[in-house]
Image (cartoon, rainbow, N blue to C red):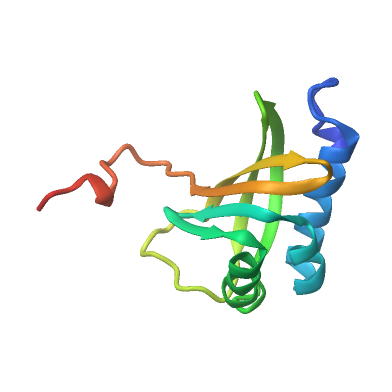
Length: 138
């Protein structure tokens, strides 16, 4: 994907776009070394309410759940909101799919400092308005 076509004025810097583009390229190529190198030593990833702290934990998560499950991202939108760069992307891979008929679309929230990812939040974008399972008590 050409992120320059999605850039919103001067809101997202060329450096931020380069990091996000490299993350997506490395994800799609299954390039573990490049993915790990994109993260700061003390970075945090929250993938669907699970925290991974520091580059060592993140490297294990990347190896197991991104590269290991052959995840591919097809980005459709990028925007900046305060200090976060948010990428909307369809995700495919060799992971267990929930029983849904719709595409698996996620928002990836990137916070970056000095050319490194310091925080990445990955959240499923739901098309329905049903209450999330996490809030159910029965």
